[in-house]
Image (cartoon, rainbow, N blue to C red):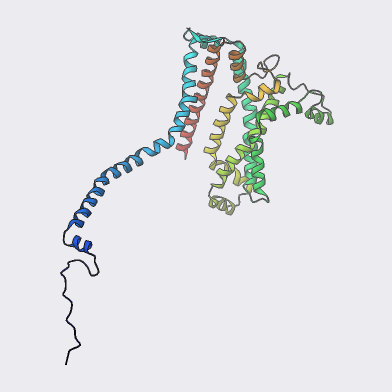
Length: 348
């Protein structure tokens, strides 16, 4: 009988895994494939330190690259004009030939101390600043207190608060100039209904300053109100609940809880409003349409006086001295803010 069993095929010796091809087996035996793999791994390891170095540089210098545009623009449009203005304030410079400078030292500053128009502009700036800042912040605080409660359509009222701020200075001032018109203004018309004679708002000293201050109040009250509202919403409700349990009314809670909690914010708005009042320019210029601030300079601010000296009398050196005087005033305001904030922190 012939056996149906066939002899097995001869086995070949491989060191690779089952089903491996010849190349894979050669790699397992340490053949050319393994050498190629080792070479490729070595190449990847060679790029490792370079990649890590780039990552370290990216983590270290990327933040500076992101903020670099701000500093470049600040240096071009903020720092350089400030330094150049300070240099020009020590020279006699004419607008007709601004490249020709004659050294005069502190003469431009000493002339300011003897200039009655400069002191008049400084006094007007201070008066308009007080007349616009105090009512503005008080009204903003009251409006923020009302908006802090749950009201229907609160989002609409908050957006409406920003509408005056978004309005153009020129448009707002021209409208107010018509409202305060002597013969056909609506303000005089309303005063006539209660028996008050027509007022010449532009030519009076106090009346013109009140009119200019009303423009500033209208534009910035809503902006400050939203700042106060954001600060009020950060006050812990536990303080109000404790005050209510002690029997405090809403008015007492406002005086003894809200206002003390808003001291840093109130100080901030006072400083910002003071800076804005010192730089007041567009409202008085467009209200009367003249750089003199009225026939007798009754509402000429420091900004208007700077504009008059530089672009109408062509004395850029004097205008630069006025600009630096305004800058020094702002430094004093900033130092006062720092001292008050420091005392408040010590008190707490």
